[in-house]
Length: 554
Image (cartoon, rainbow, N blue to C red; front, side, top):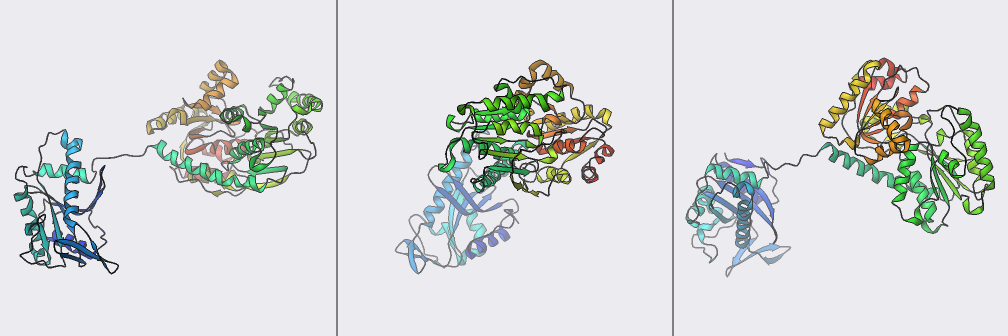
């Protein structure tokens, strides 16, 4: 039996199946039988019903025609839908033969070996039509066409064609035929997707789902006071950004507004600013930044990080006083607030006071209570319509399954499939060194350094300390969004941030304040590849289900 490519082809006609079976049963073991070969060149698309590759003989392109074929006065026709339609099987086989030869001889595997031309031929087979021994056409002598009476000797008849048809070309050796088969079947040609390629596909899918989820903004277009709640990966941040753009631009004929887009963390504010800077001016909110930066804009200075009372009491009081004095042109029609769970109760009064209309002005909050990793817990002094996002779009299903027990509500996992979460058992005291090794492993896997982050739950990584000291907070966060190197950070500052591949280093005892929330944030920062380094006993203090899920992946 010859080599069959493919092993079990599917044919559209019984005639092709019959001819293939005859050749399968009669060709030599060193021959190859290729079915349904498609080839495209600059002129047209070609399709060979069969290609027979025979060492010491040649390569034959075979066109098969069934019972509907007839030849009248030298014209080939076939019956289709009750009518006779002209066809040219000989020309079709001949064109395909030359296309195959050109394709093979232009391939570098053939050209680089300085191989000379070998014999190619073409043939037509009519397995259910008898043509008689006297049949002959100018472009198709009897020895080039094989009818139902020739099937028993079909392999031998095909072998006779190239031997007497192209005497100026040599017969192919077994090595020649091996190269021909490799070229026609694309063997040796590979394009293996990298980890980044697969992540690109998942990201595109998540982007599409997030766009679909943005329909929630159309549903809320008549509401002015809304809180949209959702777990990690539900697309809240993208929706907040989109809503700020739509309100500013006057989306779908609505009146354009003066909008402030606020968040708590410097890192997220840095991303907001970068995104907004790429928009047309008419779509850019009037203010983008943190609550602290809004106060600075109004002339209220920042305080010491070691003075909680200043942030909770003094600064919001001073901001409320400034807000009451704002002229109409500096007030806002709407505030869009991401990370609303981290806003203190005292922070809302300056915002309400800065609205053009304190009664009807827009307040659009995006929150996730399980990412509230500070003591403060405040809500605006106005009623809000709650909406819930229960889909996880951004994380792979494997990652979302791990942190789902910590989520504030049951999520539907809509992210794509990805690699399994990896857990590496390590004492908390040694976790930092083990995590560094895991970063090297991710880079060896092919992840771009700009797609990798190492996040700690306890003390900061030495690289983070060094970069913050050297660059300052804003320069340090620029390194996250520049995507040029591995990012080293802490979960406290990572809310709203994503990297494709994350090593989460649990370098603490688990007794720290709000450890459960810290773990939830850390586990949900990776979109595609998550490695967790730490002690299972420590992790279990945040949730037995999470510990069990990680134990099964270690």
